[in-house]
Image 1 (cartoon, rainbow, N blue to C red):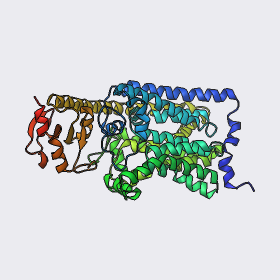
Image 2: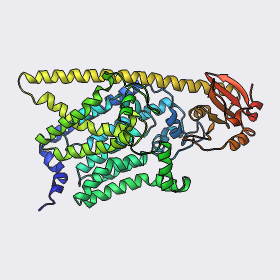
Image 3: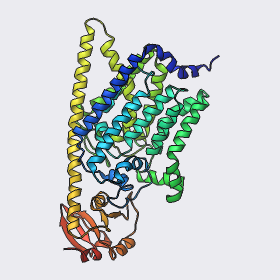
Image 4: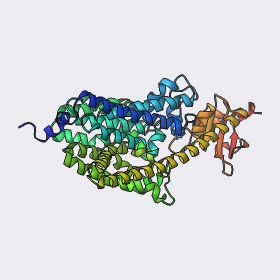
Length: 491
């Protein structure tokens, strides 16, 4: 007997060879994927605007390798993969536009390579459709050119799962995909690969198991070592990470994720009414289309690979739907990337399978549905980009005003939005409470005697006790209090 169920997985590529005849068809498939990836890059450059400044989390990641400002406090949940990814540009240039273009092009190349891994597992038309569906979501276009890890976890998930389904021919791809995920977000790598680990153990496919574990360990090695060097050990870092994220445990966050679909890049706390049904309808349709893809897969003899893909998508989404008390649309990018494949399989079946008079009807309905979906996605994207750009321009104006008040490097900012504004100002940042706690009131007061220090609060807010006696100014809706050393260099 040839390994029973194992043969179903291991021989995927062999069986599909008959469905992808000839090098010419494979080349056409590659061209389709390249067109999708190229359109994705173009959409980012046109719609997200390369000159949009860096966001809050981006300033943390970029500051680790940039000369723009001292490295920001790096809290326990973060991993340094994205800092490594941006270092070829950020280490020598402070141009945000150049960084955006670099990341947009890189994200397009990543999408092309990740989809190409699936060649032979699903037909090329399905893969191109899946790439187009994933790349047309507002959250994908928005985060593709940003210095954030979630898109790259999605790319790693596609590489890892697709390579797993082609095993044993692509064990290096399994390891590389797992390593990329773990380098960007170690906990996400664990959740995505859980079904793969379970399946490899059940099938006693030890080489696959070793590839998965080796890739995950290699990608997470720096994070684990750093835990012992800077965070008091791995258990302490994981505990701190859970605390910073509000305490991981049973939390129904499905409604939070739905509220964030309107373009709320961070929904914390996630209150308010639900978005208009036109914005959320695709979320209701998504699982139905995924089930349709499974039905199509059963009829086409692709049941095992579709089930594995769906299992990994569900596993990737689970912690962000049920274990965390807030939401951000980017958290679900890996799940969307994996779900796009069976969804594309189902949609392609709808427009090609019916015969006679039903085919035009099905094609029209799918076309209208996709057109409406795209219109909603890009309306949300436009609002999100405009709002984000305005926020970051406000930080730039505040930084310029602080420079005029004598707050120049070396300097320190504390208080409201101190962390991102510090990056724009070229200063360090400090906090005595909250998720970015890295100092004490006594340390800040001591620093204020030596270098310029500014404390930021809303215009009608009250300052921290250590800054109560500092000189107050009003700039751009903020109350700024400057310590004694900063007054020496002020206007």
